[in-house]
Amino acid sequence: MRLLCNLPLECFDEREALQGIELVTYGPPDRMLVDGVHFPFDVAFDPSTGSWDELAARLPRGFRPDAVLIWWPDQEPLPAGLEHCPVPVVGIVSDYNLSLPYLVGLWPFFDLLLCDRAGQDLFRRLSFADVRYWCQFAHKRPFHFVRPDAGPRDIDIGFAGNLNPIVQRDRAPWIERVRRLADRDVRVEVQTGVHGDGYGRFLNRCRIGWNRSIRGEMNLRAFEVPACGALLLMERDNLEVRDFFVPDEECVLYGDGDFEAIVAELLADRARCERIAAAGHRRVQEHRLGRRLGELAAFLARRGPGRPASSEADRVLGRAIAMLPTWAEGATIAAAALAAHELAPDDPRTLNLLGMATLRWRGADGGDAAWRLWLRAATLDPAYVPAAANLASLASATGDARLCAETRRELDRRAAAVDWSSLDGPVLPFGFTERTVDRALALQQAVRRGEPGLFASSLVRD
Image (cartoon, rainbow, N blue to C red; front, side, top):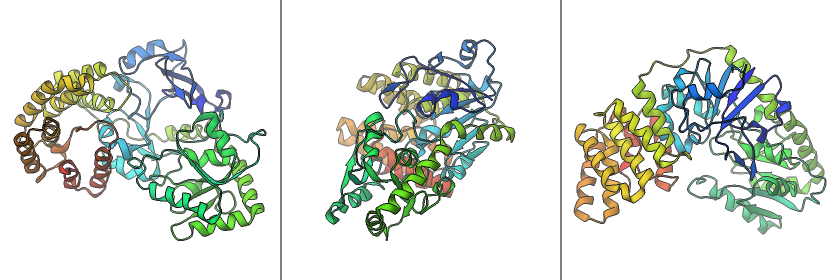
């Protein structure tokens, strides 16, 4: 199977280990920096500025892909005109708990969307034509292995990862619970900002590697811990872990009521702890990405309905919105937004997007232009909420009490009676703030329950 991919998969597994796969990767030459190591692409190509036809023209002579894999389209821009791709396009999404508002408009582009178990029903409800479960993660073999020179495992239980309480709000109380194990004479170490070789060495010092997922998924850590020879300690209500490891034989699962007791039992029986860790280490070798990619051939053999029918305006708008949180330059995003606006100049969604792109490009200097664009969008459609929300956000930055009150009243009025079409568009602020994470989670809940008012409520919350 020939795959064209926007991620240098060598960061996970050696290319010669990609069984039955001929791989070509594409991306800007200065990317991809993974855990401090630069993994080059086969084809130098900037998808934020280039088109599918331009990418196809740069592929190696004789290489015609059987499928195109696009990892993390909320982080990596799509090539323009991707709808012209003659082979199946497969999207792979992960952190939709943070970025869902930017992903919802990408339904026209994918023949197949792969996500974790918790996301399947969500993305089906969002009009993606063919959504299936596939575990996209594995350990990164260049960094995660048992190191003979690592020394003794002098940490009883360790964790290294993102400690941002906004992004990891459900994990934060558990981190404190892990830390409090030190009061029981357990050698605990919790770190953040550790990557690559340093992270691999840290896990090699741990007897137990603690883990807790966000969406009940098998995350990276679930493979990294056993790959480095530590025992994987995972939440019991995880939706996927039993597909990969046998509990109490290759990993250990915990719950709210028995976490501390399980840690104590494991540390009291070092032979059992080491036996499970060794079994997990053996098993994780079967789950390396090079082997799992072969599953994609079976997916593609079971053809779904294909890309859904869409208009050019839908596609250009969806691509431009998804570029907002990516590494694409502000001027490039503004050009993509302008292209959407030119296709539908009287659509409040394109005006709203153009206002967002203007601020993303010009910062505070674009405030006046963004205000005018959002005001026009709000005037064109008296029910449209995102433009009103953005006007209220911009007004709050001015400190003008009268303006703040006016824009807030209008936002409250619109949010009181909504349907999905009146909520279609991105809103301030940029980045992953507490407000944006709340809104992404509210959108999930609203889609799952079919109640757009749940999302509207998150837009009027201070």
